[in-house]
Image (cartoon, rainbow, N blue to C red; front, top):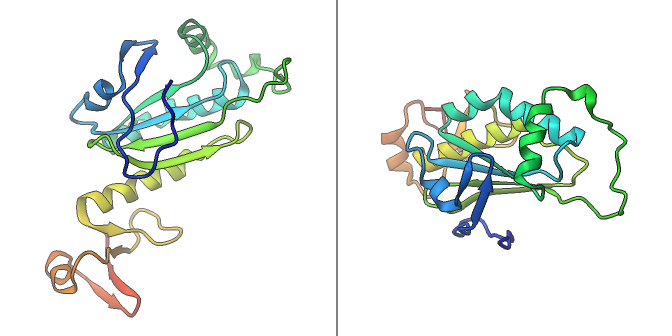
Length: 197
């Protein structure tokens, strides 16, 4: 297993994947599907646990939102491929899970790490939650939208930004270039603002 202590902008490691869909090198997955050039790699602590089950259910429910943004999803955990297959049969039956289930050995569960990797194989986002805290996938989708605005248009998003609200032209774009590129450009004292494209 590779060391996931990655810095933003660093190339993400290429490692062997054993999955429910077959075995492959991770970079092969990154390069697959030209209509989905970005990848979200998420980890979950353990199959058959309540928080992990709700997260995977939410990902399944929102898979079209990710697809619309050109994003493919892949999960990783410490469990075996056989356990993943068995769990996938139970994932829709939330009532079967005991939320008070604890690790009898007292071994801490792995964290919930999430990485967004660009088509250049470079890390664009890294988030780590404790095993007891589920992720907010609405925030992930908002962040993916922001990352695409930066990549495609040199735009940044302010605090609490939502799709359809004003965005900021990054400082790397000269004011004269911004005036040519963006309609309805409004120049403020602290920076250049523009309506979303």
